[in-house]
Image 1 (cartoon, rainbow, N blue to C red):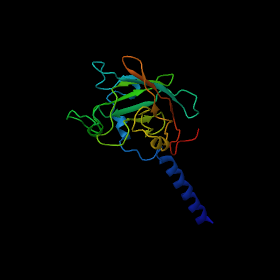
Image 2: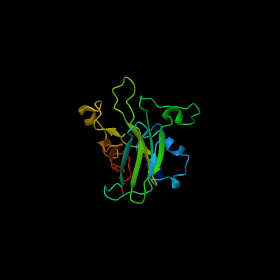
Image 3: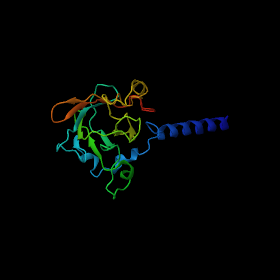
Image 4: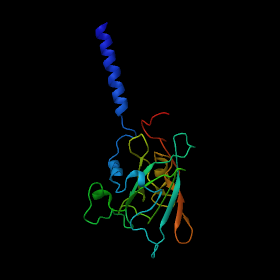
Length: 208
């Protein structure tokens, strides 16, 4: 009996440890880039203009939204978003002195943090799809919420992108909710909105 009790104790202990160390969101290559922010998380703003954003002969994008907690209705303050994407030719542009994940993600990247109302907003130039690729144009986004490890959610996609076919829409995982943004031409720029729902369709997200 003592041996059986010991085995049961070890089994429970091992199961508990595995549960505590299981990574929310699963495998996420490059998500650790969120920690490369040149500004401490506590000092991040809720609005940023990504590098290269300009109105000089261009019409940039302005995307905003609210990040909600897992209940789908309570705004989530203090959530960090890491964004990066290709340029207008479909490449991740480099300056030649990149370090860390910037060697792959390029310099069109930035970090922001939701305000007390869960709001975020960023401006950038619209990215292009990879050259000679059927992959729709997109903006990558990684999330870091308080008390939970970093994880990725669905990329920002554009409703008017001809590469975003009905079949591709049907197979989107909708991590964090739908990432498809409808852009509206407001004259000097395009505006779009996306709300994000923490934990939605995220593997191993803790129940609260």
